[in-house]
Image (cartoon, rainbow, N blue to C red; front, side):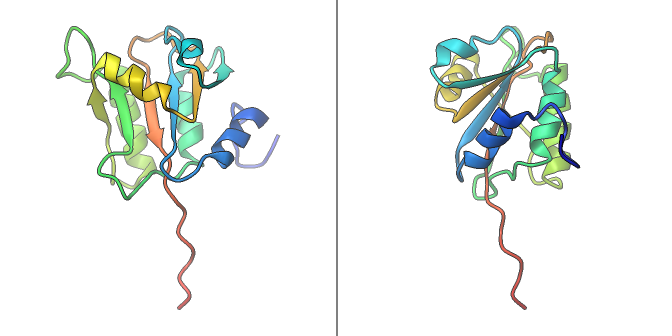
Length: 147
């Protein structure tokens, strides 16, 4: 256990977050997502909600401010122009973590799968709500001003 770090972030996930470089992406996915078939590192957080995992990760992970979007969710197949309830929760989390700089960009289901295949790692949660999938693009931490 460490101070100020959510205990759902175990050693494997903390290592991944630290090892990621600028522009690398991490996918936080629900229990139905085909994580193991993506061919990437998979960290399992069984029994943990995707929104809990996202909150813990967003507390540590800077988002890529050099890009117009740094957070992506999966479009609903039956209503592509509507964000699923869980995606609206992700959007609020991303908004808070980025001080209003980012929301989420919704992408088509199979495009989301393709993007997840290129992610540095996939965090598979126990989330049972449909469309509980989020991809985050890592940014940089700027050095303090030398004034």
